[in-house]
Amino acid sequence: MNPLRKVFALQFLRKYLPPADIAVAVKGSNVYCNCCGGSFITFLPFGLIKRANASCPSCGSLERHRLHWHFMANKTDLLKGNRKSRILHVAPEAVFYKKFNGNHLFDYVPCAKFGEGFTDEYPTGTINVDITNIQFEPNSFDVIYCSHVLEHVPDDLKAMQEFYRVLKPGGWAMLQVPLDKNRMKTYEDFSIVDPKEREKAFGQYDHVRVYGLDYIDRLKLAGFTVNQINYTSEFSENELFYNGFQQGEDIFICTKQ
Image (tube, rainbow, N blue to C red; front, side, top):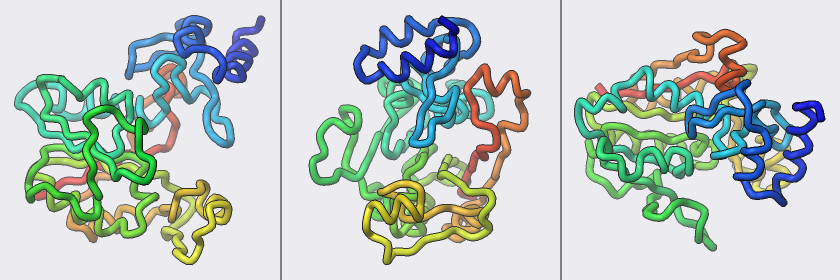
């Protein structure tokens, strides 16, 4: 079978086969996942509108996870072991939880706002935190990682202000959101509450806004100094495919002077 046809066939069978079987079936050397160290023919399609070369067959990482980890590993001192970093990780993704939890380099605090019916959505040890009212003291964390969460939060400015408050001076926060670069101004309409209408308006049933290019202004309003980095511009097309990065995703590094 043609390798790509094989991948799409396995994607269809993904809900019936164990992840380990999928990973073995697509093992190759065309792409590399820096989150788990696996090499494959290609990453699997993913998303409501399927994106090719997106999801790792082994660990489930997506384009943004691999890009963020590459940045953290190569553009920060997080892994250099110069000092122990206290990390606040919001809505902890399993691929990062495995890297942070129990690592001697980190004092790791995974957190999420527990909703009704919360059971196994987040890894063991995740604590209940409302990011609009964080229970930690000011200047508590060296690093904050929050990816694709703020678009779910009605009072996102309050959450940003809370991140600023608990971040140590000289620390940094990576605060990532899905960004529509064709939109100058963020679109939100709190009168839209029906899940189907929210999906039409904001792209997902539990989103409350679509961020535009003014996202950086919202972060600055909370007090942050913001460095918006077009990190994928540093890679060739072949490197983007090999690493499974999505071209054009900016990284927002927010610091507290």
